Image (cartoon, rainbow, N blue to C red; front, side):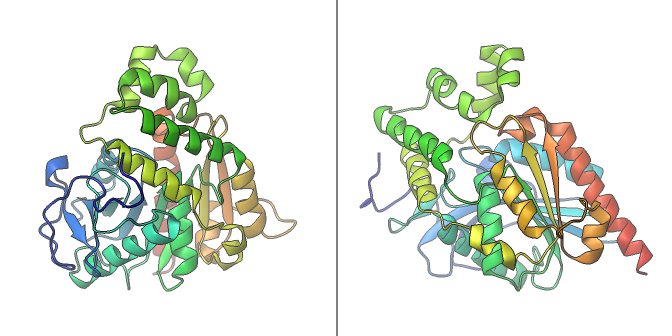
Length: 343
């Protein structure tokens, strides 16, 4: 496993100068575009999903994934999403710490570092108009660890023109529960040369999947759908991502700087992230004494928070795919209605 003094994180891919994007669009995993940051020290991948709008792209999403190799599952989910909503464009960020990452130094892969590199990618894609973000409002959506990074991005870069912020099973800081999982993973990565299905089942499945899902799903099926990815991150990369998460900036004091409507999707049987994180977000952003507003009201006001409980664990896109689709459909419908009423 790579230690703090290692030079490269993961397999070094062909480096390209910052700003030179080789192609865009939905590609196979081996053809995902690579992005090299302006300082030249980090390379990571991204994916771009385009609908086929007659009147042009109207709604854009930037998606930050969760821990450990969920990029392919997220791509499958949003590929279906853009096939249904043809006026949508989705940027999937395979941020540093995922498979395909290369660093010329030994960075701390915490929310501050990853957010800075992701913002660098957004600026580059905006300059080429591949994914306009400086003048076109977009939804920033984060899943798990990606939700923490998304919230950090928004509160540290208030000039980002967000139309909304969607947080799936977010955490504000590394509490005792999450720290226990992270340190357990780091120890296990140091003991194993490869993450096989048996190790995944005993170590990762109980961390990510709800107890009800594990009871109703045969172990071989759960193992296959949860760990079967085409491009897994090396164990040293996974370990560095866990170590970086332990060094995340605590976001509790940043909540007053949130200046966008927030939709939180919370798994009620999430073994990794406790419900108090979503509750703290709602308490900080909701108007005192008022009932939870509707999505359209939040979009119209440009603020507010809605928390929706889902009957699932941490891997919400796996366990509650249709419910997440419904929530995003509702968000888009409200945005379209609001746009029509303002014309």
